[in-house]
Length: 163
Ligand SMILES: Cc1cc2nc3c(=O)[nH]c(=O)nc-3n(C[C@H](O)[C@H](O)[C@H](O)COP(=O)(O)O)c2cc1C
Image (tube, rainbow, N blue to C red; front, side, top):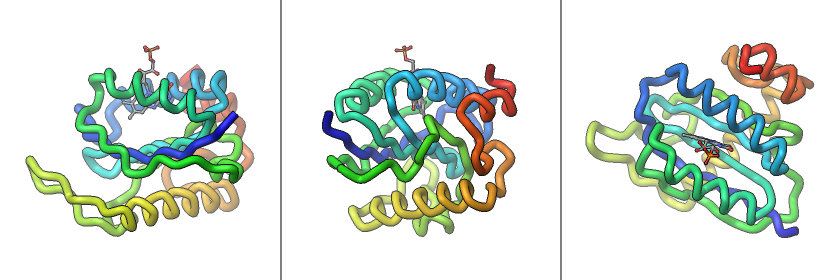
């Protein structure tokens, strides 16, 4: 089955680190395991960035559900391409982390506007998410809610009391 990668950004309806983020994480872990999707969900202040890899059909279905989710709005697909490469998120059905805008090399959006993101910016953000994922997996994350090295989906859900 053909695989794809997707990166999108959206505007959260809730403040940074709202409890609803953990509900999203809980649902993502359960559904993505069942559908063979791997990914990384990041908060940059009021915005979500989510990188996903899996079967194209499963990802298209997920985008349909995401579009109807009222916890965020203004979804902008930054990258969507076929791939034969293994997932850079390995065995993560999902991890949750926080970035500053300086980490992803773009200016924060001003109220009522959004910083435009070019194709090159999108590639850089994807690559940054890949390298943070591999550093987290090798050395451990700076943020307590991100995945620990070697941590299974189940152990992660238990540690964050999402079970
Ligand atoms: C920012 C964000 C990221 C999400 N990521 C996922 C995900 O990776 N997998 C997933 O199944 N649902 C994810 N969801 C939740 C879906 O939007 C949806 O609520 C969930 O899949 C259940 O859909 P259903 O109620 O139609 O079954 C996310 C929601 C938000 C707001």
